Image (cartoon, rainbow, N blue to C red; front, side, top):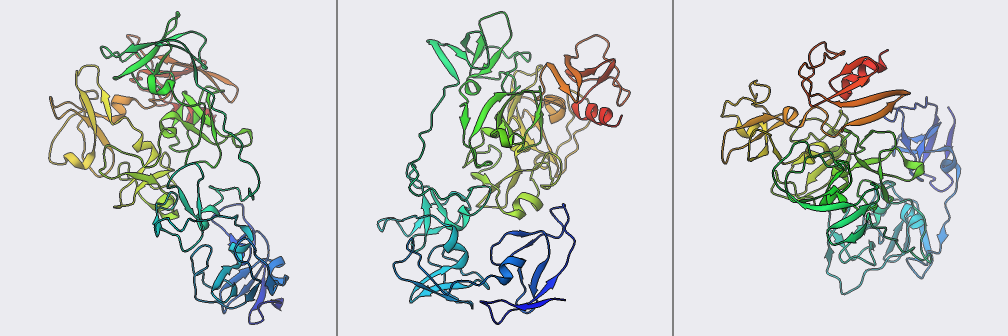
Length: 483
């Protein structure tokens, strides 16, 4: 086994280790102590200090003196051993990290290479508000701030996250003005021409509930408030809020602006909640088309006020919150279907996934004149209720929820019974791997027989491909992909 001593760390004895590189992200992924890059080949390892280096860093000498004029006017001297004082840039003490120092100025090796200039005014308070990790920012150390927004500060360490910053040096580069393109042209008072539709739309005031009126942007019914309806010979309808959705949007889930589009293949999977949808979609740039958000998840901003929780919620950022933390509603972890990204409470341990957070908190049932409110299952564990749609008992447990009207009547409904299995798939046609699929109303007197489960389709819509009929998108994919 090959053994070397690092040219700048004479106390380190490094041994060469061979290992198999796997495409699986959870297997054999090592990070170099010096450059922090992922190592996909042989590693040099020091068992005494438990340090790992790639082959380049293990043989590369580190400069004894550097000039770091961005941070300090005087030359800095390299100290190969740990100095237990906080870095003047990030304010952290990193175990095993070497340090450049002059008297009381300390800059860790990693921070000195990649950060851009930032300043904090002496008049600012000692602790600023946070916007990424939601931890306090001390103005004795470096911090990034926004020139346009008041009170927006980010730790230097947080800016090194690849999902937040591309790492490009922008000092001296003028910021490009953001061109705002309106989603519609205002024809007159109460009349618009939306970029997704050819006809003029007229502003209407909500009247009687009609379950057949669905917004073309989000597929949800027109429950209340104002909406735009087509003045032509079609049923195109938009919630007023959906009609005002910006064509370009910055979102906390993505590092670059997203563009509002109509689904180009007829359906897509939301990158936040993994739900399939036929609605409007926010897409990344051409190189990142795999990132897509439906309008419900795209409308989530920080702090998010979820009606089912008393405190504001923020995007879950830690690995524990994103992967292993369990959603309070569906009780699923981050690696399970339909529970990928989450929102977390910084005051308590409340966690909720995007899929549950963006369920309609209030909904309507066609045979009830009142609104039904979403409730968590365990909130009603002392009662015996029956779903008025499927006529089966509502089983109360820690998992899931239901809709109920407690103020005026005793109506209780399962979520899937009220919203259907695929609430965001609307009537139309899409192409699935070369096969044309129709989404049709299921309103015939004799309900069709599902080719997947051999029972009658009860939902409002069915999927038809050739002479086959399916009652859900998931079942349709399962059968066709198994052929």
